[in-house]
Amino acid sequence: MAGPMRIRAASNGTETEVKILMSHDMETGQRKDASGALVPAHHITELTATHNGRVVLAAQFGPAVSKNPYLQFKFAGGAKGDKVNVSWVDNKGDKRTDEVVVA
Amino acid sequence: MNTQRREVLKSGSAAGLFGLLVAAGLITTQQAQAAGWDKPAFEAKAMDEALKALGAGKPADSKDVQISGPDIAENGAVVPVGVKSALADTEFIAILIEKNPSMLAASFTLPAGTMADVSTRVKMGQTSNVFALVKAGGSFYMVSKEIKVTLGGCGG
Image (cartoon, rainbow over all chains, first blue to last red; front, side):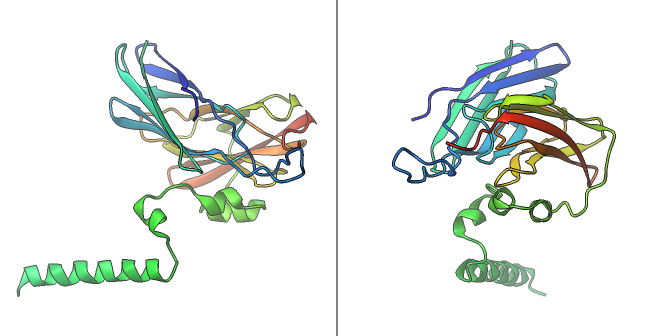
């Protein structure tokens, strides 16, 4: 199973900047293993970030997003102590959800 | 007129149509449950195909959209790319890489209140133009930037 995400959310009073580092292989489906067989694609397809229950970002990833994907975005509002929740789903149905408190 | 009866008929025919579509294989039940991952767009091999799948048609140029990234990336497996749009009501951003096996790398839907400023890291097989497609106020805009890759990130 995939490891936890590292999420940081920092508010400057008017907007909140969120940085996410996911732990995922992001296998493209193009690579061959030592025996020459194709390694099947395994990558995150969808990611959703919510702030106090409201969606602030919906992303879709293809296999061309780097291994252990990094994502950074900003949204208006957000105060210290608020909760930012990030969840993703991959093409094999694996899921992961992590939550962080805005600093 | 019996309005209740009208309602029942309406919902009945809607459900019937839905069932037909599922049966005809036009939409799978999985897609029907949620909009989900945009498979055709992510599997598009050519620019026109990808734009069509995203419903973008022929996007216009814009000076208000910026792509940030290195001019030369040493390692194609990890290329930082950021897209920033100064256009009002930017609601959608996509990153496309021209010479990758599939062009679309990632797409972002931005609800109101989220800044049009996202950064991520992508893989690039070789030196290529990187495109940022932005939807703002119902229209599509696109800009490009060439990123040279010293070591490809899609081989093995």
